[in-house]
Image 1 (cartoon, one colour):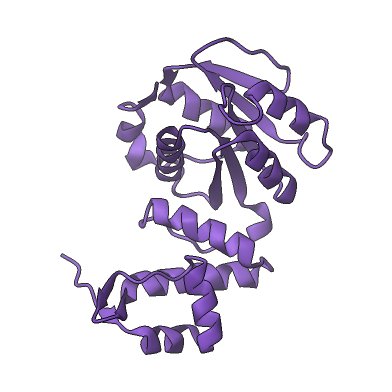
Image 2: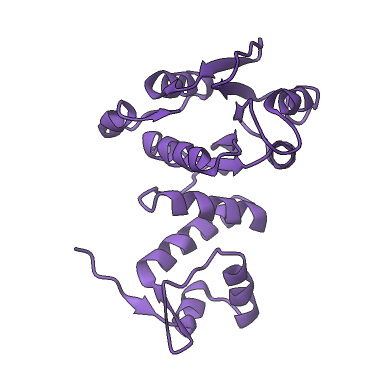
Length: 226
């Protein structure tokens, strides 16, 4: 069993070579997180801090700003075993999931990160169509997965119509999912819920050229989206 080494705020600042103000900003944004508190004193897992430092440095080397760092940290938090060391950030794959059921969105995030763990890519998750469109416009996406039944603001068909008429987003590949009705489009693939996850990841692998982690295949066959 791996030993957890706890360090205090001063040690974290030394590791990152931060000012106190930078430390506070990163902590407020969730980029740095304490794992315990004793008598109002934050304690941090040194191994976790070093991994977060690696992600931040990799992002900065590739010219990415704070918003991108926050998103990559969130991806890391879905699976602490994921390795982030981007040799060519500009060629990393990006997947956006627009799904208002947070449990389904989280399942998909973790599933894809584990299935395609050997790739340089990140999964974004929006819980409504308006936020999904905003993310897609700000950060180019290789693949956008849309639940066609969304409760707030816009349904999946409206979201899709907005995305394909916008030159910033219409080059993405699309996958549509729904348990209520079918949907056809020349620009995307439709999956009826419950989704066959093997066929689902096969199609993602084909659409955006991700490579599956071979030892994880058993994971693929035992899950479904309902």
